[in-house]
Length: 411
Image (tube, rainbow, N blue to C red; front, side):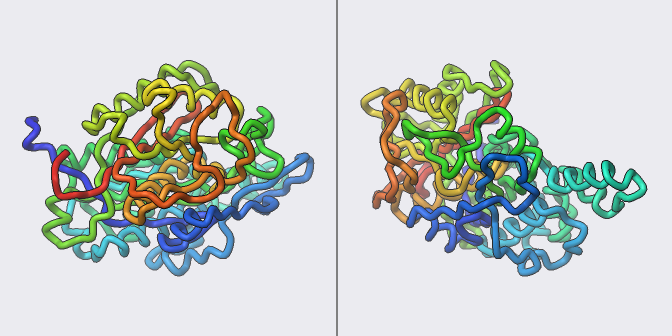
């Protein structure tokens, strides 16, 4: 395929379910104000844990968004993915009739799928035996429902529904999958992002390896103590530029390129060389030089290992003295697992369209081993034109997406 056949890909809709806001407007307000909604976890019994703070979604009414599916047939993560998808489609200005006239891709990244329901099933079997299990609950567990339920909700038949389980980089993997599908002409429209719900399994796993912070998440701070688990969904409408222009759609930003790699270096420890290589792959794919990037949205978990390793990789690619501001939205959102890089992607798009750089909150003193400008505590007014969003996952699954201001010109 020659370059002339490669389609440009733009973002025309966003949908958000998060602890700091539901919907684009609330999410934007939360990011600009450096809001956090940390509170004691209520999703499961936390007895026995020395600390159990998290970033849960509260006050969310899925019935406002899930209109054509019985809510009782959907697990919490799937409720998130369907609701965020509905918001994104409405934001794009597409009607369901128009959507149904196209070949559509739905790609949802996740870490846990419906592990929250799986926890419930396990507890039921332990206490009541298999006979006590609810068939309806069991039917909600398959992770593929996170994407398939979106297709069902919208009544789509010309659709590919894919759920990508690449852990904490899964949102970026899904966006990259949609980007490739549109760029190659396989589809004109893709609904892409990630979703996860708070569950005991993942919280306990992170707790057992000593990476859950007692009170707050402090990425790049010298006294950081780990992550706070979160939940939510971020879904984006990706569309070919030709399709968006033909229907007069509002264009938020352009997806310029992405990079993926998997080093399989270690089950949980990040690898500096691999992360740096993934950033270079993304920049090369986007046709962007390091000097053009206005800020980096880091994976930025707030763990000892991730932040030092990621910061070193950023400085290797951008230069120790010339690295752009590097921020972590997890300081506000907590670690939303498969939704993390999708929500951060929407944050990047809003930063481009609204003219600001989101802050890294809870910051007291930058760790000298990190040595980056993390935009501490308060958003900065700016005009970012090109932004890099990192997603790094266990097993060495890395995914980096580059977003740019839509100018009408090919870069």
